[in-house]
Amino acid sequence: MAVDTVGVGILGTGRIANAFATDLLNAEGVELCAVGSRAQASADEFALEFGCGTAYDSYEAVAADSDVELVYVATPHSLHCTNSLMCLDAGKHVLCEKPFTINTDEAQLVVKRALDRGLFLMEAMWTRYVPAVIHLRELLAAGTLGNVQLMVSGGAYMPERDLDAYLFRPELGGGVLLDAGMYMVSMASMIFGCPSRIQASCEFGPSGVDEHDVMVLGHPSGALANFYVSLRARKSPDVWLLGDRANLHLHAPIYCPRGMTLQPHDGPAQELDFDFPGNGYQFEAQEAARCIRAGEMESPIMPLDETLSIMGTLDAIRAQFGLRYPMEG
Image (cartoon, rainbow, N blue to C red):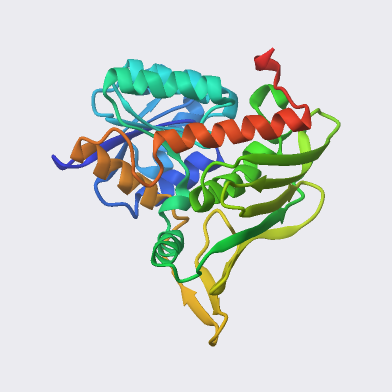
């Protein structure tokens, strides 16, 4: 491993861990060197597929590996806080998959621990780092859309109803809000900041998780973010931004868009393409490595204060749903 390369360990061997490991092959400055699972066979299979040097039958062993500088936490939602704290206590930098934690109290614990230890910490909101969203931020900063007053977004998918899957298990932090809806909450935060008003409603499924959600976030500027997310219908998730100079359609899927349509009010529409290899996880990995090598404890693109603010918004939405997870009492 090159001197300036950041060694990465992964906790978990599920779908997201697989996608992340695949994209590390397209990333510069990072190298996968360890993976941990609750079962040795799963870790061995993962390591063989991705050319990872070491496979462990525990998460703690990854955190103790001297070749690992950065740990990517890809375990179930309910374990994010515990796993992140364990890695930070072992002296590792942490990139934690979304949702960052179950709630704000947990998030504050993790952020404080990272600050106390002087270690890098980042929510793995990969959407922030893909080329199309980087360009969107540039358009907003340049005033190309003018005064953006409305975000309209939504998506729906109908997964197989496997009650053993995390999505349908309250004890793992399941439900559609923390799985998919938080992409829209994060996008609204990136564009408008923290909301000052929230209206939210949901329908619960048989297992007790939210399956069918609608939310409106009001902001001090007067801007509104209106979105839905559902497990009971089917529509690719996209975003519309309406400004007084132009409208912008960020193409589906919202979590990893590769194109957008910019429609000025006084001119022809422009189709913009932002293709890239793989799934798009390589960009967040590269940003984490850049920050670590630069001695930065957080990324300016996904700062810790904003992660805490987003968790607060998710808590407020769940309060209106009447949704508490079993580990919250």
